[in-house]
Length: 194
Image 1: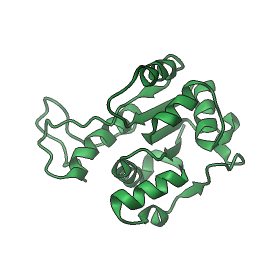
Image 2: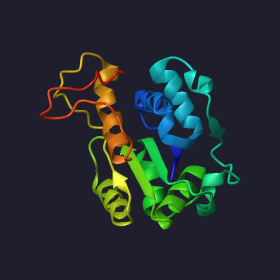
Image 3: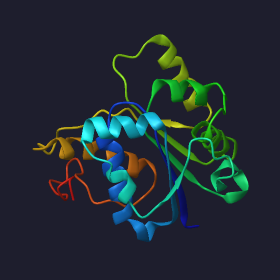
């Protein structure tokens, strides 16, 4: 089955992760059938603050507003099989962990979990308090994958984008997509910025 993917971008710091994820998914367009984006208003503001632009408007993708419950992935019958929340705020994590489907992001996550499909939350916070940890446990027990925005440095990244790409590539690996990236022990791999 061709992948039908929804990417949700919340208001957590780390817009570079969302940018690189979307761009990498566009480069991997032979591996998906549909790619839809949901961005909160806070995500748009954080993007403008951190990246200094509104380039998210330029991607040739389907965008849905935060409260558009008519979006296809608001129902399991649309068969979206993968959802990535990048970055994922602790508020969004908490609502997903407790089944509070009060917007399209949390409704879509609830659908993915109930249909036993793949949900990946790129959580972005430090340090974690016990509530965060318990919410991550709840999502994990429900079948979701928690992937903190924690970069690796094995390949000696030289730019912020290369550092962030180590997390994005890890998420894409978890998603089951074929990506060219640094592989421990191989001594090979493309630059993470490619």
